[in-house]
Image (tube, rainbow, N blue to C red; front, side, top):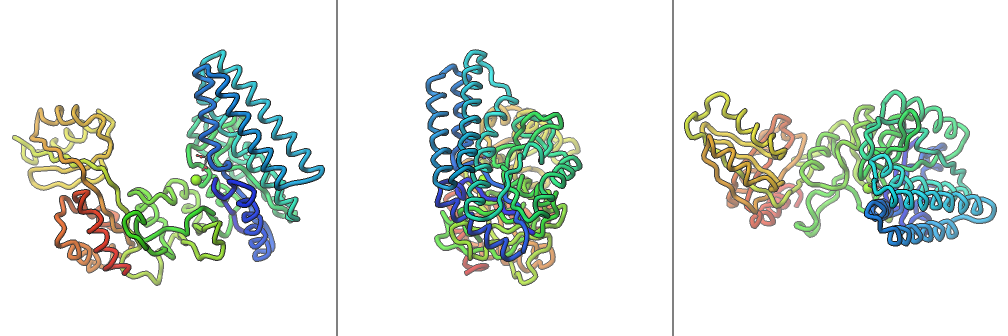
Length: 452
Ligand code: ASP
Ligand code: MG
């Protein structure tokens, strides 16, 4: 049995949901049971709900209520396009009740002028609670026994509203009690992603983009054979398509490689979201809902046995390099501590660090406190700053075992001035820092060498 998670674009309109229905039908025919379906809110709805909350907070009641009315119409239109008869009447009653409640919340908030994180979650959760009800009804209407499961009874979290953490044991028990009996009874459970509740029943959300996380939590909790993330891209690509016009699809990646790529700017899958799947060693497949026959990218604990060279590349722009040269102490002990204390004091994360006997270079992408940081560092070091830099990161598990690959990376970039080079302890990536203007050329060369 598989867990199939559908992102906002895969439930954006009736046609998208019709594609979803056929994808679910095919999985059912293939596996003989399931799948378990996890859905995002209809595309754009979470943003719209957060706007409603902000407007209520600012006492702009009319704007907020106009937004709520538009959202109600959109959900009702979806319901009418995808369901019928008695179930449609029940569905529209749910949608109306949900929006009546939201209307009452907006009016109350506009009076109180105070939107707490807890209230924000009640508002934000509406998107997934409704999209999942609509999809469950649409499946049933299409002859597939979809059954709505309230995610607030299946995913039990901490009370860190707006970024709640799932509680492992409680959630596994809740998923086994709510989802598995339905699967055993031949049904297709449908849950909203992103949403959960505390043990005492307060609605929570897992943070923006949290539906992938929900997909992995559900997959781990029910012991799925695979987790399928249905989205609007073909899978992970070998390079950024804004720079390389025809990148290739990466057929298979290890979890570790996927995590490094995501960290360095590949947007498809965020590493923390698949953590529950990693722990349980459940393969994750990234697939395009518009091209359901595509192979997608398979992410597994083990690296691709057929892989050669690199898995993929990622880039990050708009970085600033800060060079810090010890004025007196050279590399005296305590120097690095003082350097990093300054970054810590200004809550500025550094991405890449290289050191030599007398100096440290770091990259930062948050420039907000740069002036203050430079001033503080200047008390004990010479500091220079260079902007408009970029990071290019070549990722592959094989870098760990085959030194020749790293040598190839560096020699291909021979003619590109490299500002910093680093291979960190994981040895799964080689990262170079270069001038932003040189990034396209460097990426082309690397791509040609390893994927051309
Ligand atoms: N709807 C939520 C968001 O937009 C969660 C998700 O789609 O992953 O952040
Ligand atoms: Mg998403």
